[in-house]
Structures are given as structure tokens and as C-alpha cells.
Image 1 (spheres, rainbow, N blue to C red):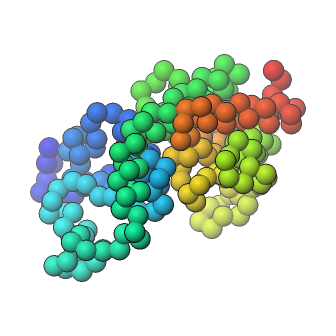
Image 2: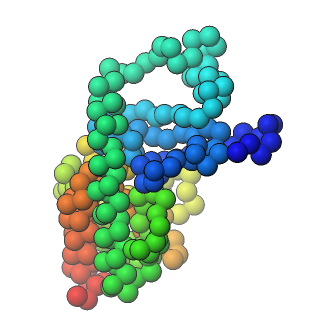
Length: 227
């Protein structure tokens, strides 16, 4: 639905792909973009992104990426076309597992008395689960538990640090095969009140579940959680 010809509506669809039958373009968005190291890459794409929407706008984006007249007809793919296409093929199943993991995380921590958003039975538009932990110590313990469940660098101990662009220190846990991949099991958040951690990903539901268990175990070992 066009509101006004002179207005271009764009959506950042990161974390939202394959959660519903309809995507933002079905709701009238003119153009949307997302990352291939999130949902649509299925955990296999090493880098890259996508654009979708009105053809005239995609043409303009492609001209900016390469040059006018060439657009998307050629460009660097880093030799990973197969990985991108295979990742796209399995992405719906991968997202399904990550979504189930987010629901499990929300339900488990809700039962432990924490505020969570969205709620376990709420309609979701992305794979992210927010848990209000209430203290810096709890955030650190949670992220350290997630890191301990990682297939890569599980021995690393994440700590808050001064990340450029943030007013507060940030803690991140992501022992992923692809750096920055948040369809893989990860958790992060700024160390500021009300101390909310953001849990997402897991290439399989079983790995997401393991991450939730390790996060709860870390909280218990630090004396923060009494179960």
C-alpha cells in the first residue's frame, strides 16, 4: 500500500526472517534489507546481506554498490555462492530451532521469577529473547554460561568492556563458527539498569537448550540463583 509516492518506507529485517509466512514487503514496505550471518544465511554464509522490494529501488541500491549500469549484474561474492544458497535453503529449519530456543529461555526464566520480553506465549517477530536480570553480576554470569556452551572458544571468559559507540560497558558471548553470527547461540547487553540480557540463536534447538541450561548453571554457581 503506497502512502505517498515521494515517501520510501524501508525496513531493517534482521532477526525477523522466516518467523511468519508474510514478510515486511507483504505489508507495504518498499524495500527491506537484512544480514546473511543472521537468519537467512542458515549459519553457513560467512558474510553478506540481501535487499528485497521494489525493482526500481533495488536497482538504485545495486548501482550504489557497484556502479550505474552494472548494478547487480556483477560483483564480488568471495566464492561463497554455494554456501549462501545452501544456507538460504536450510534457514527456515535453523530459524525454527532458534525460535524454539528463545521461547524455552523465556519460559524458563519466567518460571524463575524474572521479567522476560516477549512472554513465552506472545506472538514473536524476531528470534531475540530479553531477560531482565536485575544486576551486573547476573548479566556477566548469564553470558559466561552461554559462552561455556559454545562450540568455539568455550574456554573464553567474557567480561564487560568499553565498546565504541556505547555509553556503557557491553558484555557479549558468542562462540560462533562465523564471527558476528547471531543465528548461532549468543547473548549480549549493555551493563546498565535494568540490566537486560538479550539471548538469541542456536543452529539447533538442542544447542539453544544447552545454552539455557549453562546460563542457569552459571547463575547458580555464582550464588545468584537458588534452585
